[in-house]
Length: 367
Image 1 (cartoon, rainbow, N blue to C red):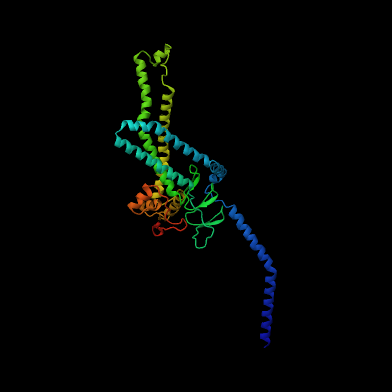
Image 2: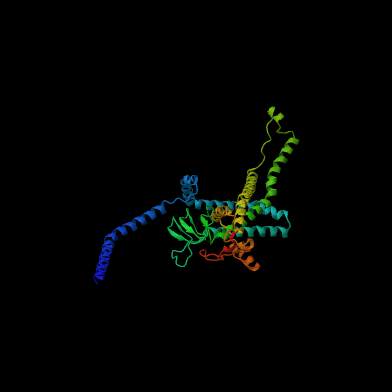
């Protein structure tokens, strides 16, 4: 009996000591929790996501470029519209009359119909690419798959979502921020962007080929004038110049000079755009064919190098094959839907909501 009383006293003493300990340690635990919270916030705000010192050193340059792109985006869109307008005006003034006078009625009308079709598709897809929001993650994340936490927005990010430093927001399936669109290329306007690039390249090739004869004639006229002046005694070789013989006078009128300048400007501009935009279009065609975006290409390349050391082959989990990838991005399934949604202007929504994605995860890792 005495032993049981002794044990009860010890138990009561221990319980009272625990109660006193918790009473005095509770403020310290709250202070410790706040300290850990502040420490986590500090680490999240000062986290360095750069892969190298050089990339970190160029961060101020990136900020300046983002600031310039954000404020001059409207100017870039205005430049694109002015260039397209100038090409259309010169085409109507000089190339169109040449086509109507040179070719037969059927071919010339098909020629002009094809040109107007390209113009319609270019204007439609450019307008939609500029005005369509690429999509932002929902604020309510209940039931939304999350892959990481955005350190800029301090919000969870769904798969394929990335933060745009120019727009200051996360974008669904972000590919890149295009200054010529003054908009991000993401889930809801990716189709408009690639369609605009393809039709624009087709349009510049069409204009360059149509105006090639006129462009070539601008220089042939100079050769004909030189031969004509040489026939009557004028020449421009070095021997005659040493005798101080005057050069042939310029007999071109202001209208002819304006015509030559317009045609040369038209052909050089369209040819330059064909080369530059054609290279960009081929790059995005390559990415779409592999089921990747520009950002995912960089991420997947690092993953491939890491797994290659372990003799594991890696492919994008969103790569379903060449044909299926293009069906997904363009939003068609049959030939009829291809004509209605790709060949003709269409405002249909892309497949999925940009938050949840079908994945080919079982074939992403191949030993």
